[in-house]
Image (cartoon, rainbow, N blue to C red; front, side, top):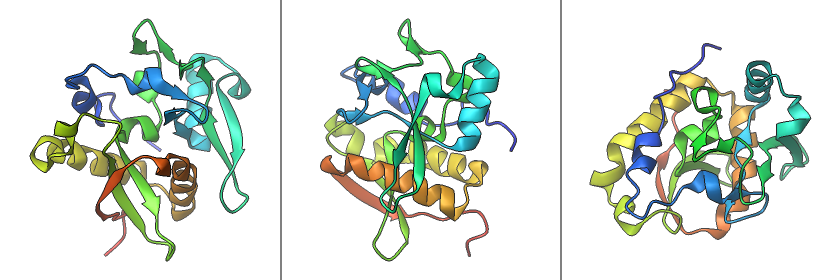
Length: 179
């Protein structure tokens, strides 16, 4: 997999947060914002680039159907990589970080849907004119990642822990190769 450019994703959207909430600082295990999900290929890249052992910065959880899925660890109330008010792995941060505050849920019929959290972001962020260009960026990141349906299922399974938050469904997910 080729690596994404550091600027790809939704950071500019979050950087314009009018209340200055930094969700990287609110990320914690079973907390207000779940610690970011990480694909196995992403933790391998993070380990190679940081020189850290995978177990130092990530942990394994059981998915809804018993599969093993991985997330980044948190350090108190923040992501382990959030240091000195910034992401120390920004250029190779996980897909989950690149698309936040958008997320993907899996419906009971196995179809996937893009959602936007309504209670994690300020109200004005839920206005389509405000988020549309950032949503398009998140969709491009998904296509560039070339996630398999298995990886997407694991991602959505981990995201189910966030279902206690209010969200709105934006549209069905289209993967590379979908018609």
